[in-house]
Image (cartoon, rainbow, N blue to C red):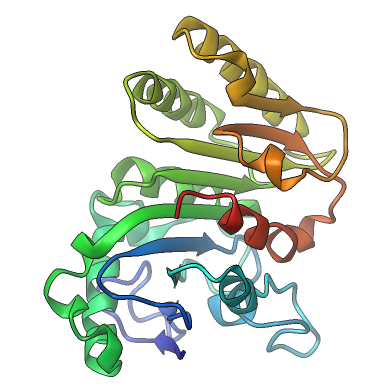
Length: 272
């Protein structure tokens, strides 16, 4: 199935940037009646077209790629891949309009309307595309931590599963408030998932503190301690470990390889 790259979008994070604003890949297994949504944020010094592509990517010299299209297809899941562009090949954490209230839902609505026009199999999305989304997984790599927290808090779309890929550099207090809220929601019966995979260095101290916070929050709400996988010993997680509803795990993977290494595993262990 095809991949669409859209430019000149009115609801883009940075309208008029001169670069593509969003990428959508429709998997072979796609059923427009009801589908999951994977949102991926690439972080510093990259772009949506490159992280979607297989290695070595689209640039010379190469930039790290997450090989997202291949991982979506290999998962066999009915999941639409949606990549909103923030800052094209810049070291910036600015989410632009995606950080505003309703920014994510406005951009996604515009993209789904265009997809409905461009792909006959998705024509029905032009009427009630947002209502067809069964569950949403948002993955943020590296410097995308700020865009991720803003989109979860204010984007206008329910994010059921949030995954940080070596990304917890700052905004720690905002993530503490978010986890406090989401643990309470789970205790009330909501189906939540949170994964933080990190490596030694820049994100480690914040991540360890986050694991300790989750341990306390689960206990406060009477949730079973085994719902949390918190492990600061460096090793590759198994898919059974990633299937925990709460995961904070130190891994040995190189920072640039997180997306390419873990997206497939996260898809297979998700509720999408």
